[in-house]
Structures are given as C-alpha cells and as structure tokens.
Amino acid sequence: MKPKNLVKGRGAQKNPPNRFLQHIYEVRKDFLEFCRLEGEEAQNSKTEYIPIFPKTIVNKVDSPDVGMDYSMNPYQGCEHGCIYCYARNTHEYWGYSAGLDFEKKILVKKSAPELLEKKIKHKNWITQTIVMSGNTDCYQPAERKFQITRKCLEVFLKYRHPVGIITKNALILRDLDLLKELASHKLIGVNVSITSLSENTRRRLEPRTASIQKRLRTIKILSENNIPVNAMLAPIIPGINSHELIKLAKAVADNGASSFVITVVRLNGAVGQVFTDWIKKAMPDKAEKVLHLIQDCHGGSINDNRFGLRIMGEGQVAKQIHDMAKLAKLKYFRDKTFPNLNHDLHEQYKDGQMKLF
Image 1 (cartoon, rainbow, N blue to C red):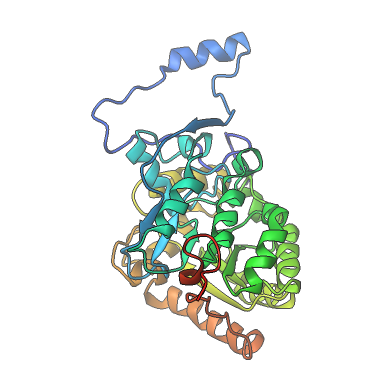
Image 2 (cartoon, rainbow, N blue to C red; image 1 turned 135 degrees about the horizontal axis):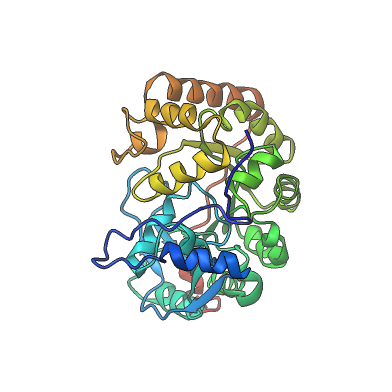
C-alpha cells in the first residue's frame, strides 16, 4: 500500500499539542480549504532559524543509561526529521510542538563556543568528556551556515579537552583537520548513527539525513585517519529495521568502526503520537504490526520510562534483537575495542597553552 497524505521532505506529519501550554491555537479547516481552492500552500515547509541566548551550554546528564556524563547542544530542534527521535519532546519546553515544529524551528546558540570556553577554564571544572550532542545533531544542516560545532571543536583543541561527537551527517568530514589533531592527543571519539542499509527505509525514517553510502564512507574516512568510530545502530525498530542488524554490523565493521551499540526504540511522550500518526500514513500496511511489536518490547506500551529497560526493552522480541547483536559482535568485532579518551592533558592546558613546570 502506498504512503498517503505525506508532508514531503519531513518526518513528522503533524504538530501534536504541547502538553505545557494551556491554550492551543488550531488552523481552521475552512482556511485550509480556502488555500486549496486558491492554489496556495497552507503548510510552510521552510526551516526557521531562531537565535537564543542561554547562560550555560554544558549540561550534566543524570540519566544512568545514556552512557555520557556531560553533553552540549549547539542547536535545539533538528532538521534531519528522524521520526523516532527522543529529543522531540524537549521542543515543548520552548513552547513549540514535538512534531513539525521540532524540524522547522531550529534554535541556534551562537554563543556556545564562548560559554564552552568559560566552563572548561573554570578552576572547579573536573575534566570529563563532553558529548556533542546529547540531544540534537551538532552537524545538522544548520551547521553548514553557522559553523558553531567547528568553533567549539577549536575550543576543545585549544584547551586539550576530550570531546565526543554523535552525528549521522557526513558534514563532519568538513572538520577533518581538527578531528585529526584532536585524535593525535586521544581527545576525540565519534559516534556515527546508521539505522538501515536501505535507502527507501532511510528516506522514510530520516528524510533529511545523509545517505547510507555517505555515512559508511564517513566511518571509513574517519577510521583511516585514526579517529575512533563507534557505530550507533539505533534505534532498532522491530518490523522495520530489526532484520538488518547483523548486516548493519558487518557493514560498519568493514568500513573500520571500532565498536557498535544498539538501543530498542521507545516512543516517549509526544513522540508516540508523532510516530503513530507517521507510520499509519507512511507504512499503512504494516503500521499495526510494528506498533504491537514495539509494545511487546515495553510491557504493552510504546513508551517506557524505566531506567535500563527503556532503551533495552524486555520480552521475547527484545531478546531476539539482543541475541543478534551478541552474535554480530562475536563475528565482526571480536578483536576490536573503542579506546578511552585522554582526561589528563587538559589540566596542563587550562589557560589555553602548555603550563610551564
């Protein structure tokens, strides 16, 4: 069955209500009908960049199962439009929707490099790896225009501070010069997200992301330049990409990845509404099956707030996914490890240059 009534070039197909707002304003159907009759476009698909001015940029991550202690996000919202993205809910804190607003209204933190420098120079700062980004992709399309991520990498290099990167965009290769120098001091680890080997699946799940071949090439180039890469085969969505797990692991191993991790999809908060609406339009023939499989992984619900279980899942379907991951690691990653980053060098460069002894 063909997809129906899709907003082209976007992941989310609607803006669900913001749970923090008391008053919701809806576009009247008679206005939409007027637009249709007049031949006008009622839905403006242009991305809007909105500058914001935070007081801090480095965030302490309290969640015990995310795998990072500190993160920073140069951007809020993400034009990539990944339909399953857990970060969609954070847009509600800014008064926007977790749906189309998350993809179309990108909040830009131009002061991020200065705030980062202030943080890691502080006398009370104890060196910990800071990850860009724990929330939205630091190499999303906005980065080509604003170059905030590159400027932050220059700060990390200046102060010899360890940094992790999570991305699914080949734009990271623009900064290969900085990444190579950081890697020479064991200060950088890159996590490249890849969820499918099928371009058809990728276009549906992640409409504005780099192609699969570009991501595999990115892993290869980074690895060839001695920049350690962990592949994030996440999320695994039963009934959509779960059957690809072993092939995905082989593909990233063949291109030089040092390790891989998986998570089982969970549709927390408003993401559940966004995903359910999307799959019934984009994949109507398998929508109910996929939703039931997701529920089987989370105690009968598509959402799961239990630490540990929320990203790993439970039950027979989740067990099959994790069994495949174990097999893939034994087969393709037996002698590979992702290195620890250097946390000792920063203290010698806390003033921006090598301290004299």
